[in-house]
Image (tube, rainbow, N blue to C red; front, side):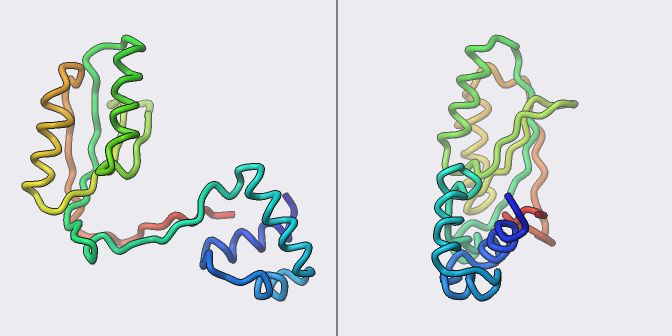
Length: 150
């Protein structure tokens, strides 16, 4: 990856709908070069996905919860089952395996506190492998971005 690729990626992180022509002008390269570079960036997985970023509140998701989870056992099959469950649940928007006091950290979106409570019953209390979980409810979002500092 060179400086031109970084320029293209920065522009696309800001606005994925930026036209090839605009990217060409911004990077000082031809449209054909931009198209080739974007194809390579997509094919190699540097660009994983191009999505619309939604405002959670405007689509009815008023609760963001940051949850630390500790599992009861260290059996690989149970850890894999928990990971699979988290990856498949649409309310879990971020899921990290971490080192430290907990085993996992997750971001969970819910309509309201009742919806989050239903999630906890379904996701944590119904799972005998969950030792404990600690929830912090987000009061205000000061920064939330998918842009990487490249």
